[in-house]
Amino acid sequence: MKENQRSVSVKKIAKDLDLKLVGGFGGENRLVYVEMLARPGVEFAGFLDFYDKDRILLIGSKESHFLKLLDEETQKSRVEAVLSQQPPAVIFSVNVEIPEYFIELGNKYDVALFKSNERTTPINSKLYAYLRSALAPRMTIHGTLMDIYGLGVLILGKSGIGKSETALELLKRNHILVADDRVDVYETAPGIIIGQAPKILERYLEIRGIGIVDVVQMLGAGAFRENKKIRLVIELEHWNDKKNYDRLGIDTETYKIFDTDIPKITIPILPGRNTATLVESAAMNQKLKYLGYNAAEALVKSVALKAQNKGDNDEE
Image (cartoon, rainbow, N blue to C red; front, side, top):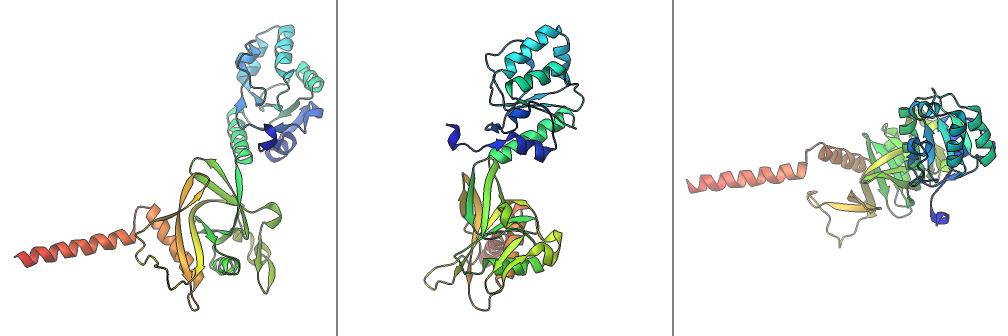
């Protein structure tokens, strides 16, 4: 079953969260498959009926002080009962003094033991958020992701339509690149879709006729960000005379990523139309909608009100 699940190695977690390995050196390459953590209070009390061995164990001051209430032989037997199940790793918060027998048992069962430089609550929150992101289902979308006025805008369209060229123009207007050509997306929580570039493609734009452009080298570190929540999808397409395009913006299109519907706008491309300006305007208009103002609805209400007032005057 685990072959089809996403996983992250204990070694990578330790590197990314600045955890110090203090024991169980043979367990660094274990894989973590679940985002939930375990605070082994009842387990140290000897109750293992509901113990989930796939969870990382987090030991803070409460768990440590509880163990100290027991005699050393009982402490060791309770801890061994837990570590013999070979959980992925054990992390101790900054204020916990790690008993020598704990390190011996970690080495015996190849369970990596780490010391954090943070207190229990902060490391618990940070670790859960990290695992939630690392283990979330992912998919790849062909497109360009920009941060425009603080709004994550995913630009779609067929190859050659001008997505990267539009992104370059937007960068010159002080907007921010997240990913070009390939956008990796994942869901951190229901309705929260995050996009980012693959590591190897971070910072780069591919412009036909020019080649690869490093936006950080060209425009500075502020031109790139690692990830962004996607809140608007814009699809660029060549103008189609037979297609009826929404002129008022009343109809709402959506684009589904996983189980989340994201507002979508289709922009037809014609010679002479400034695509970057259109994308920028669409992003600002969508941001106003999120803030509670819809220009199309305001116009329709205004026209309806004028029509009603005119009708009332005619009756008089």
